[in-house]
Every structure is written in C-alpha cells, then in structure tokens.
Amino acid sequence: MPEKRSLSKPSLSKPSLSKRSLSIGQEALWFLYRMAPDSPAYNVQAALRVRGALDEARLRRALRAVVERHDVLRSTFTETAAGPQRLIGLPDLVPLQVREVPGVTDAGELEKHVKAFGDTPFDLTDEGTCRALLLRVADDDHVIVVSAHHIVTDATSQWLLLQDLLDAYATDTAPPPLARGYDDYVRGEQELLGGPRREQLVTFWEEFCADTAAAELPSDRPRTPRPPAVFNGATCEARIPDALVPRLREAAKRAGVTPFALTLGVFQALVHRYSGRRDFLVGCPTTTRSGPGMREVVGYLVNTLVLPAHFTDTTTFGQAAHTAQRQVMRAMKHIGYPYALLAGEEPYSSRNPPVRMVFTMVAPGRLEPLLMRVTEAAARGTDTEYAGLRIELIDVPQLEGQFDLNVEMRQSATSLTAVFRYATDLFDEATVRRLLDSYVRLLTEAVDDPDAPVAGAALVTAGDLDDLLALGEATDW
Image 1 (cartoon, rainbow, N blue to C red):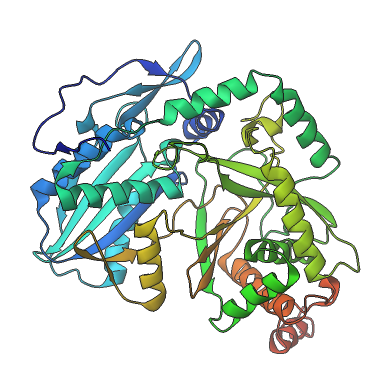
Image 2: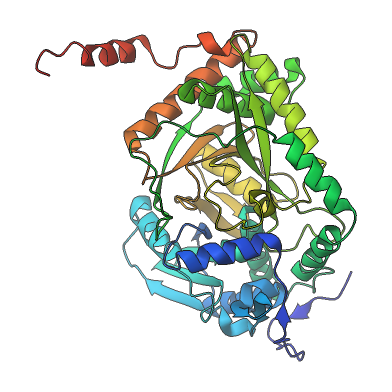
C-alpha cells in the first residue's frame, strides 16, 4: 500500500494546466450549463451535522488534500475551436468558507442555510466546479457542506468526496494518489466510440427503442415551445409504510425479480394508468463506475438507460416487474453508449429527448460505509459515528427540474422513501402529491396481489373518489 503523506507537508508536484477532453455526458452538461448558467438544477450537494469539537485548520488541510487527489474538483471549463475542454487548477481553487450561525440549532433552519449554499450557481469558466462550507453553530456543533456541479460529480461521487474528507481529517494525512482518474474514463469512452463496437451499440438502441416515444403525463400547464432559462423544480417525498418494506422485498424474491425491478414496474404501471399510453420510454440513471481502480474516482460516472415499457389490458403487476427486469438486464449490456447520443445528430438541442421521466434506486452498499451509516441512522432518526465524529445526515432537495419527473427510491436496511422531483413549469405540488400517493397505493396492491391486472387497480381511495365526483355535481357552473 502506498505510504500516506502528511497533510502538513505541501506537495512538491506542480499541477498540470493542460486542456483535458470531456466525456460525452460532460459535453451535454456543458451545453445545458451555457443554456441556463444561473440554474441550480445541476448542483449536487452532501451535508453532515457534526457534534463535538472540530479543528478548522485540520479540516482545511483535509479539504486541500482531497481536492488535490481528485483533479475534477479543481477544474474550470472553456470553449475552444475543438469544442469544450477542461482545465485543471490549483488545490486552493476550492477554499473552505466559514459562516457563523450561533444559536441556529433548529434542523429546519440549518437546512435552509445548506440549501441556499447548494443552490448558488457555479461559474464553471472562472470559479470552478466545487465549493465547501463550514457552518459554525457552536464550539461543539457544526455543519459540513460540499457542493459541486454535476459536470464533475454524481450522487456516489459526492459521498466518496465527503468520506475522503472525513478520513483525511481523522488521520491528518493525505490519501494516496488514485491509481486511475476521470481522464482514464474519458479515454475508455473515446476508444469504445471510435471502434467497431459503436455500430453494434447504435443498432441495439435503435431496435430496442423503435416506434416508442418518451412517456409524458397530463400536466397542469402546457409545455413551453422554447427551453426555459432556468430549470424550475421542486420535490415531494413520502416514506413507504415500514410494514410494507419487508413484504415488498419478500414479494420480489418470490417473483424472482429484484426490489428495484418491482418498484420500477409499478412506476411504469403508474405512468400507463395516468397517461393512457400502452408503449413508452422512461430513463434509468445508472452508474458507469466499473473496471479496476474506478471505485474511488470522483467524477460524472452516470449514464441513463432508456427502457421501453409495454402494457395491455391484461398486464399484471408481476408481469410488469418481470418485463422491467428483463429490459434493464438487456440495456445494461449496452450501457457504454452515451444517453446524450441517443437524441440524434444534434443531441443537446433536440426538442424530443429520449426520455422525459427517470426512475432510480439509491441503495448504499458496504463499499460506501459513510453513506450507509448516515442513511441507516436517518431512517432511525438518530446520529451515528464515523472517523471519530458524531454525525447525522442533513438532507435537502436538489437536482430539481432536470426532467418532467425524476423519481428516486432511497433504500436503507429498514426503510424505503420515494422522492418525486418535478418540473414546476409543468406541474403543481398538489398534482405530484396525488401522483405520489397513487404510486404508494399501486405498490401496496402489487405486493398484496402481483397477479392483479394493472388496469383494474384503484388510483385513489374511496374518500378521494367521492371528493372528485362531487366536483362534477356543482350547480353554479
């Protein structure tokens, strides 16, 4: 194992200022950034409340070491004749901001501070891609926040970054250099797309998605003919009843599918029932963090799989789950083809994106000890210990407005929470709340009777139905 370097000793190596190529996904995000530079829709953040004494100078050394380890965090972006490129800056491009918030002990008030910090737009051409904040509530009460633009991170990367930060703080030593970096990922993508495999991938996706359009739901307002200047969004979420969670996992096991396939199949059933469409496409953001040495890399390592769904009048919940699992497995074999290229020759300006809704599940594993601990503790409503610190999760809405609807199922050992992020240009909160309630109802029915036809499932309770029917009985129209 490489010897760790003391944080008190500055690195003698000079950072490269050469231009670096972008991945296809980064190019798409660069286009979206230039279209709406003031939008926070692609800001990703992670925050922890830390109880006990905290050494600010030691935390600053740890941050510098982590930023030095992951060069994407000290990047700026520029447009050249050859297209957008990435420039690597110095580690001090990401300073630690400190704000005093004495007496602000209420969790809701702290969340407002965290969200305001995370929603601050990035200037990718000058400021960079990442920022860190320390909120000082008291000498023994702090909040650590790390925010980065999606062009250099993803959900897994953000927690790897925070985990590296706490590890470096605990040991007061710099982690060893990475065996591989994000540039290796970009080169691998370029080799794939420049070789014979590309045509095979193109053929698969053309056939896989043939004659099927992106799913759309009835909206409260018409879709604007031009892209918005800002991707406006909000979030609704609901914890799946705890008693249903073990039954859901058991039902999936009996059916021979994964819990993810079951929850995805039910979501597709929900879209079918609300939209009336029998055939449609939804997306599934999936990690591309594979291969030796990539597990510890911070970067944009996600690709969206485009999954066709097909329903008939007799399709059951169990059949929907099996179809979802089969489609995911087929798509995963072809994950190397970037989602951004599926829109055609003008992928970033397309008026008809491959998908308008996405569905994913976040389930921390043993390779993500920090995320696993804070997720489990949050499900119990407690804090936990990591790297000698007492910590608890501060979760705030983020990544809102990217899609019509972005569903994230957050799973722990004992809980499951459905998070519905939605475009407020299209939907009212009440509409999405009804949609979320209907999803929980369908999920319950699928667990109770997987052989039940999707077409016959009730979307609302009897009481809600009476209220809706009463709207049609008014005499003052």
